[in-house]
Image (cartoon, rainbow, N blue to C red; front, side, top):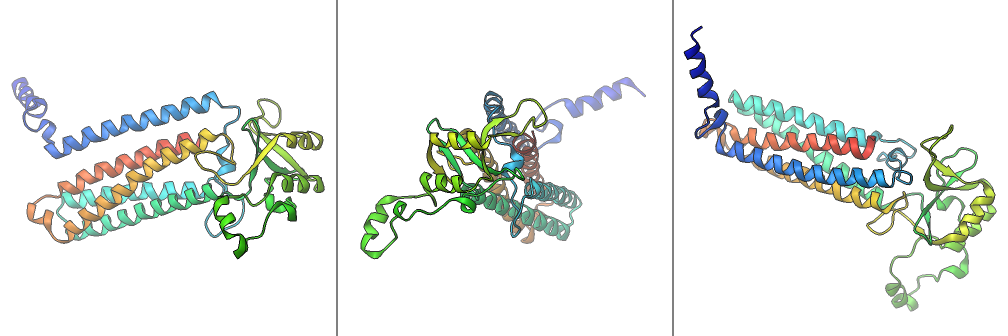
Length: 328
């Protein structure tokens, strides 16, 4: 083959000009945005990794935090998060099929695959909203010490978490009933946990099977990687440091352990969830434009391809978030 022909061919492809690699202006701008957004997510995940490494001995264990499945009661570690991940990845597959159908000018196929992508994205966003609500509400409760440490309760027999409802004893003098005559007092009181420290202490003394589990992770031995469970005597002694009852998680307190864990959870998953929600909205707009025949009249479906790049990026970022936050 003539070398001059080969050189000319390479120059046509890599020579630059108005469309390097034959990519349109819009597609290049999408790539620039995705690169900048990737750097942003990288910064967030790097900060998360640094904080986790710094507080590795007290960091919450994901398998013990994300154990809920809608409409089912029990301990199902990571099942629902795995389901969310599967749905998002499958939506990326349908987006690939939509882009391919667009390249072949198959309007009906593009419509159906875009519809499936939108449904997958909506399921993921809804699932993440449910996960947030469950995380915020909590279902076990814990004690925060004067030093800001979290004390959870477990069964001495099984080692499983025990909810405050299972052993705390109500003390009549600890709470004033909500009546019309003291409604103003109740209005000014603000949020009050289900139980007071005294009620938890009374229930703890009455149930010998309940022990305290601290934030500290065992570093060696048979129970390496698990949270430290105190003896019965140490449990009663540790309760003397109790300051308040914590239920669920927010930006100030976190029944699952380190406050930073909740802060990063809300910020990183929320930021990613905003991207997915935005992608669903954009996909809906493109979806209706496809139905109206906008891109068919243009003679190409490049807009589907551009939004597909964004959607694949969102899916890829979730793989890293899922790995860093839930698996590692």
